[in-house]
Length: 336
Ligand SMILES: NC(=O)c1ccc[n+]([C@@H]2O[C@H](COP(=O)([O-])OP(=O)(O)OC[C@H]3O[C@@H](n4cnc5c(N)ncnc54)[C@H](OP(=O)(O)O)[C@@H]3O)[C@@H](O)[C@H]2O)c1
Image (cartoon, rainbow, N blue to C red; front, side):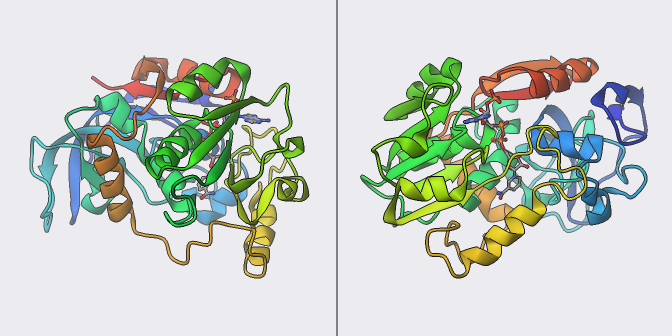
């Protein structure tokens, strides 16, 4: 089969399209014929091998354990391994190829073996490209949105970085829960955010949301460019600040541990600070989250936004676009 191969950590410019043996479905796995796979910031981290700590966390110490990048996939089941109960050949599926988002998951190939627990059946009303764009971003959005009580009808929710992978889905899920959503991003994305249901938009190049008069019951902060103390100013007394975390492709400069120390401190503080973190006590497994995402897609309650699609052979340009340009939705790879 054709696959994108990564022999060592470093610039995505080193990735090569090569012919390699097809994987086989193991126990509890299905072999998926890939139709589309998506790029997101964590795929970039796994390819460049930074922050370095990810190499110790399971990605592979000196070179990637799995030489094929990509964790988000949509395709057709080719065959099923032992003890697979939910899928059979011919089923259209989408999901995560690996539970570890900081390691290569093998999605950038014609075939990938995936645990059936990480997949859901693909709704017929979305394309393979749209379905492949959802899993990692959707899992982060759902796991970080507090329960419906906290963002129900009339609650004021602000999403900073609303035009990205996580933000576009978090915005739409908050609207499903009938919250009023303020979406913050670059000026070129504001029309898109309105079309996704944002009640109010803020151009971050002109306005600092932490200095406005509005108060929010929830702030979902993807880029993390304002200090917590400034965000508290615009939270209601019972409001919550939920940091997502973005290293802006290494521009944060934390090459060894990345943002991990900062987020560890916030996690510890959130035990004592009612305004910090989502307040979710336990997180559902991948199978449950994928089932929720499938339902939302099928009901037309979330619409994935695709910025651009590239063939596998143009993976270098796809990464360049991801890192350097202003995106209006997700970047996907189409696989023949
Ligand atoms: N917390 C968790 O549970 C968890 C788990 C796994 C991963 N993560 C992290 O979650 C992140 C996923 O983010 P994503 O996929 O949504 O990233 P993304 O697609 O890059 O979206 C980030 C958005 O923020 C915008 N932005 C940049 N600077 C901004 C600013 N100063 N003010 C407002 N918006 C700004 C970006 O615009 P431009 O495109 O124009 O820059 C983009 O629209 C990754 O970094 C990943 O490591 C979090």
